[in-house]
Length: 79
Picture 1 (cartoon, rainbow, N blue to C red):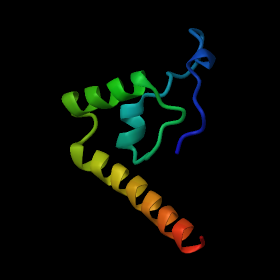
Picture 2 (cartoon, one colour):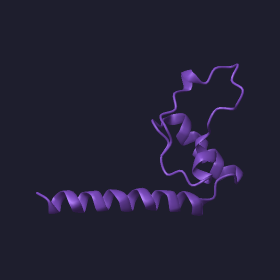
Picture 3 (cartoon, rainbow, N blue to C red):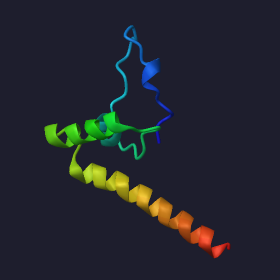
Picture 4 (cartoon, one colour):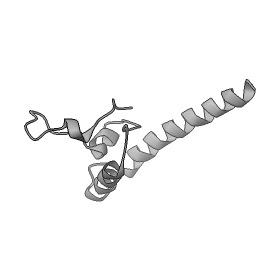
C-alpha cells in the first residue's frame, strides 16, 4: 500500500514527478491510498498503453482478495 498521497501536495515546482497509479501497480503495489477516479483512469491507461500488464494487475488484486478473505475468516471464527 502506498502512503496517503494527496494531489494538493504535488505542487508545480516539485523536483520529482507525482505518483501514477499505473506505475505503482506495475511495480507490485496492491493499493493506492486514498485512491480516486484519477487513479482508476491511470490504471486503465496503463492497461491500454502496456505500461501495466493485466497479469500484474491480477496478481495485485489477488493479494488484496486473499487478505480480505483471511481477515473475514478470522473475524467470524472469533465471534
